Amino acid sequence: MQNVITIENGVTRHPLYRMKEPINLQIAAGEHVAIVGPNGAGKSLLVDTITGRYPLLMNEVKYDFSPSKSKMACDNIKYITFRDSYGDADGNYYYQQRWNSHDLDDTPIVADLLPECKDEQLRKTLYDLFGIEEMLGKHIILLSSGELRKFQLTKTLLSGPRVLIMDNPFIGLDARTRGLLHTLLGKLTEMTNLQVILVLSKTDDIPTFITHVIPVEDRHCGPKITLQEYLAHREPAPAHVLSDEKRQRILDLPYAENLYHTEHIVDLNKVSIRYGERVILKDLDWTVKCGEKWALSGENGAGKSTLLSLICADNPQSYACDITLFGRKRGSGESIWEIKKHIGYVSPEMHRAYLKNLPAIDIVASGLHDSIGLYRKTQAKDVDTCVWWMDIFGIADLKDRSFLQLSSGEQRMVLLARAFVKDPELLILDEPLHGLDMRNRRLVKDVIEAFCGRKDKTLIMVTHYQEELPSTITNSLFLKRNK
Image (cartoon, rainbow, N blue to C red; front, side, top):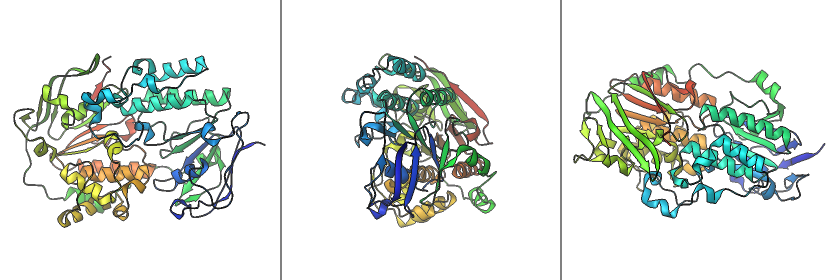
């Protein structure tokens, strides 16, 4: 039998990137694998070893990519990582860039970045599936996080890889696109020599075309087992994770003295946003009252994140719109920093923008000052508050770890603690459970529900998974695309 990838007693040369035991792994032709495990377990380390990113001490990774003409791993293995899904992580991206139209001239459009493809049928299938035709003339920085995922998947599949590795490929995609992607990948594995390796944190929707599962836990690479074996022994997601003691601690938090106490938190009056010919929002009226818990949904590219950027004053066009926050009309002389003090926020754009290798506790502390990246030492008076919230999210032991050395799931938990750290009156969560394992997803949902039990707390939450919404949701808004 042809083994496409073989690792025998694999130990990386650099101690920082080693698993706790040598890796022994074979992936045969025709096998499609899901690598699963908790956040921070070592899934990405295993993939980096498979792709040859980290050289091994003794035995190098063996590849047999036949019938591919090239023997080079870089030609045959394509890996879409978590950060790639939000666009090229070239270090030039900054938070709010997506909404600053004056930066457009310096950024490429989608059509310029898609490779040629000899297989016209594949190209047409991908373009139809992901709605690429509508995106061809758009600048990369204007794409929503879901659209960026679609672009990256199309770009990668057009290159015709022998082995396709994808980190959580379904997060950020609306339900329709998730289903179509499941189907497409299944067809490609049947009709071509493509082999798929998925790195999954959310393990309750493993595609049916997956044949084998490799469990990873505490930097141990478990034996490869069949999908049927894995499903037969998989533990169900817990009903609750947050302890009663921590839940009560959240409910008992003392309230700040400088609260707004307004009946209306958000008022949008005939708000429209456009970039060139493209209309994102059109004549939108929306009122969010104190204590309401809103679920905000819609297809990829419908304008959900743009709407939230207006509320958070991250979008320059917000000053041309009729927007009132906490009873204060935008542009009437109010300090946006004063308003931001009362808003806790996490989003894919924010996650992408954090490229500074700071200790995790400094990232959490930046939420107290509404800064993206904190360039001063955390104040002693703030340390206890930051550690308190990190403990609530079960990540207090990560406080001194460098943010960029954490797994993407651990990073998301840090950014969630950042959103809650100032006990905000308005909590805005844009796809907060991205990349989280089943236990952490339940934990975060528990924390949200406990937080919403506090007096006069208002929530706006975006998700493409209905089951992610907390039980406290009172209202919903569905956005339709304005082409």
